[in-house]
Length: 139
Image (tube, rainbow, N blue to C red):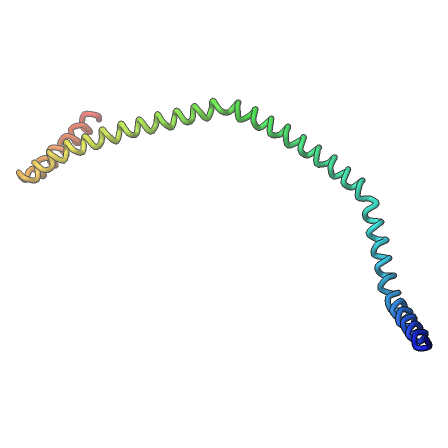
C-alpha cells in the first residue's frame, strides 16, 4: 500500500507541475477569448449597419439602372437612324463601285484597242487638246 500512496503522490506532483506550467498559456488564452468576446459584442450592430448600407446601395443601383434604361429607350431611334444612314451610305458606295468597275471594263477594251493600233499618242493629244479647249472656253 505504501507504493500505492507514493504513486498517488507522484501523480499529484506531476499534475501540479503541469498546472503550473500551463498557467501562463491558459491566461493568454483567457485574454484572447476576452478580446474575441469584445469584438463579437459589436458584431450584430455592425452587420445591421452594413446590411442597411447595402440596401441603400442596391436601391440606388436599381434607380440608376432604370434611368439608364429610360435614356437608352430615348436614344434608340437615333441609333436606328444612324444604322439606316450607314446602310444607305453602304448602298451608295456599292453603286458607285459598280459604276466604276463598269467604266473600268469599258475603258480596258478601248485601252487594249489603242495599244494594239499604237493610238496612245493620238488619244493623249486629243485629250490635251480637249482640256485646253475647255480652259479657253471657261476663260
